[in-house]
Amino acid sequence: MVANNLRRALQSLSDGSSFTLSIPKDNTHGDYSTNLAMQLAGATKRNPREVAEELVARLNADTTLKTEIDRIEIAGPGFINFFQSEEQVKDLLKQSISNQFTFNIEDENKGKKVIVEYSSPNIAKPFTIGHLRSTIIGDAIANLLTATGLTVYRDNHLGDWGTQFGKQIYAIKTWGNVQEIEISANPVKELVSLYVKFHEEAEKDPTLEERAREWFKKLEDGDSEARELWKKCIDWSWVEFSKIYSDLNVVFTENNGRGYGESFFEDKMQVVVDELKENGFLKNGEEGAMIVEFEDNKYPPLMILKKDGATLYSTRDLAADKWRLAQYGRDTRIVNEVGSEQSLYFSQLFELEKMLGWVTEGQRVHLKHGLFRFADKKMSTRKGNVIWLEDVLSQAHEKAVAISKGDTAQDPESIKKIAVGALKWNELMRDPIGDVVFDWDEVLNMKGNSGPYMQYTVARLGSLIETSEYKDYQAMDFVGSEHILARKVTKFSEYVINAAHHFQTSTLCEYLFELAQDFNTLYDTTHFIGHEREESLITLSVSVRNTLQQGLSLLGISIPTKM
Ligand code: ARG
Image 1 (cartoon, protein in one colour):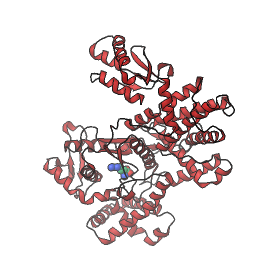
Image 2 (cartoon, helix red, strand yellow):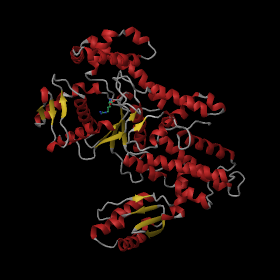
Image 3 (cartoon, helix red, strand yellow):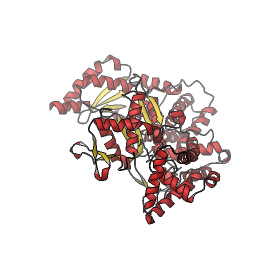
Image 4 (spheres, protein in one colour):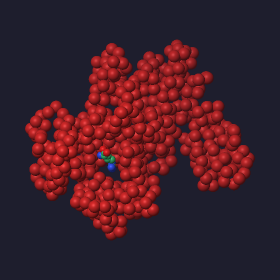
């Protein structure tokens, strides 16, 4: 694969300097371009163009690049641009035609493990739009990492433990009715109302907090009534969550598909607390809580135990990571896809794990997404103002029906694919970091740069390919924009590799969208069927179709058979 070979050749000339290998926006600047000459010149105070000339001479002499690279040019202040050979373009097209994509030719990821933890909703609380973002992004990232040859474990860190269950149990016992919740259409909504009620009542009567603590203590001590109510909360929530996962076509691999929730680490926290003590990291904080402080107050202290000795979210995360490293191997990378509001917390957590010598720099990754806000207020479960995911899904379904024609609108499977495809694409196409004001039109967008547009393009290509009599897809006689499109197709693997490397989907989406657009433009202005080069045009169509389909599939988006 060109980019891989190029990277290797440049690496050997780099003297350890860092450099980029990028795909120029403007294809007259070549298929690939590097800033290596400028980097080297900067380090040695030499003229970058001169350095570039030397590099080019050596690259031209590199026989490993002979068949792939046709010519190398120097541009601007010292960029080196590479133009793929025709032979190479054809080879890569053949790969896409036979659906033989390679995303990791060097096997450098072989045997490397990574845990991708995503979704992680909380029991007895709404599956929020934030959890939806985490689910969609985490799943796509896990797919991309798998494609590049890593061994990927998909985990779901369910919030199924913690002092809030004391409040929940107290609320169910005081104002709720288990039988009624059981038969209600939506038990989780009942639980959330009870939880909201608890907080309203506790404002008036602060002693309720004490009752809640007692119930949590009972739960921890294994009291059968407390355990039973807690189990019910989990079962009710799981029914709902698993429906969402099945709608979204998302699976987890760990703990028989349930993921290791917080409660799994209940009996694995003491060793962590002991280890913190032995290392002298555990200090008395204000009001008797136990905390960890960071060198030079790099971060604020992290609380590990509450004043009553109760464990926290942080205690369970530490236990989870210790267990994971023991279970999967100490070099395993751990990626948590969680909202950016937890950035400080994850920095503290990673820092502490480094202090403990568990992990090295870069081994822990917080993959963040911004918050969805209402224009005027923050979403909050306690206050009861949240967007319910089921409403998002049902609105997406309605809209999918509205944009579909004929048979498709009648076919529930196709509608689901369109609705879910739209939600996923809208999420994956944008840079996830910034906070966004929640906007129904944006979340459900099905026009222009959208999931349905991508699916529609694949479906359109499918029927075109079916219509043509040509079936052997060998001819590759391209002119003008066809040629540009063919070259674009050959960049697919590089975009996938980059997306996996940076845990970032938006550039891959941008690439796929451009590919779809370029194809549609060509198709709208050219009669493929009956064209004198129909065979070549159909070959190109197959390679674009396969590439788009594979790209969407990596993003977790399926294609309806008809649209
Ligand atoms: N349950 C948490 C929440 O909804 C997210 C958990 C993220 N994962 C973790 N290992 N802390 O905010």
